[in-house]
Amino acid sequence: MNKFKGVFLGFLLVIGIGCEPNNPFGPSYDLEANLERDAEIIEDFLATAQIDSLYRIHDPNGVVIIVQEEGEGNFPGEFRLIYNNYIGRLLDGTMFDTNLENVAIENDIWDENRIYRIFQFTLGSQEAIQGFSIGFRKLRSGSKAVLIIPSPWAYRDQDRDNIPANSVLMFDVEFLGFE
Image (cartoon, rainbow, N blue to C red; front, side, top):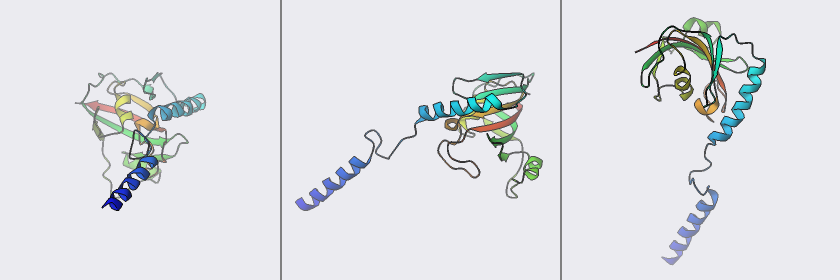
């Protein structure tokens, strides 16, 4: 029995040494460091990007909202159902997603198993990436804008289909309305 206790304690010691002191499951995601890195990437991108705009909003969370057409509607409140169209791109211009079937076909990203329709999500929920909630809070219904979203408010360090880990994302959005 003492031999079993010794092996068990040795096993626990090896496990304990191999893990971070505050996180026994391995390295944790460094939100602040990724936001800082992405802020530099976004700043460099915006210095040369040719994006028409009425004005730009630099949200404290790091999301940049480039308003191209001001809507005449209201700003949405928390937990409101948002209706919109979007085109998602990497900062190099590579399109990775859209809810518009004709745009998907034209850009060779069409998926026959997908139903293309107006995209809806509840503001402040987990139904869309966090960057959408951050961006749409600053838009009036009826607006058209470009949202530039740092990786912590998108897919973080996860590879997703045509989106590499830690990617800053850019979305052309058309805010159709909310209820």
